[in-house]
Length: 167
Image 1 (cartoon, rainbow, N blue to C red):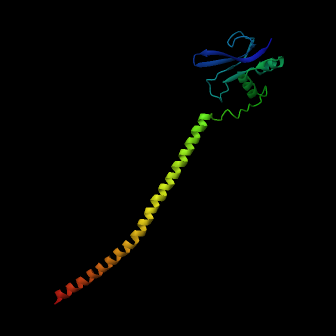
Image 2 (image 1 turned 60 degrees about the vertical axis):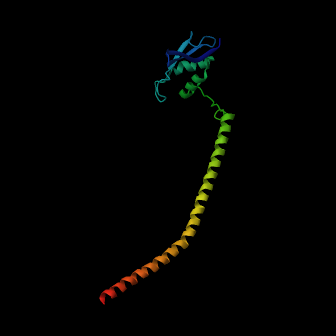
Image 3 (image 1 turned 90 degrees about the vertical axis):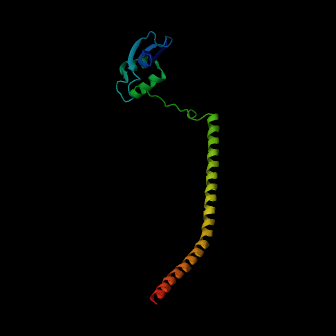
């Protein structure tokens, strides 16, 4: 008889609670089992000590007899230090699909175009400012010359007015 250590579901709808049981591998998930060796309550926080309760002596006994744990129970046994679990490596798991890769490429191309357009707009905006500054410099010099001539005339005029009044 093939014996498995697995989870048997209990609890209400959307409120799961599991028993860690040793059962015949051919029996149904929530069916008859040989022995209950622990409990698992996924509703509790991960750092809670009450989340997984396990009778380590009975687990070691059933493993020595040849029981095979399910993947989830194997994780619990590894966390308890009873059974070593080799980490699985699936490098393609996090890799995006073809459509997602195409969307990322299109997005990168649009971003590059927008960046170039922004650079060109900045260059165009700077060019007229430089030209305007170059045009304004002679105009400012001419205005300064006119202003100095007007100031000189204004300074001379009151002097003449005062002379006329004095006479």
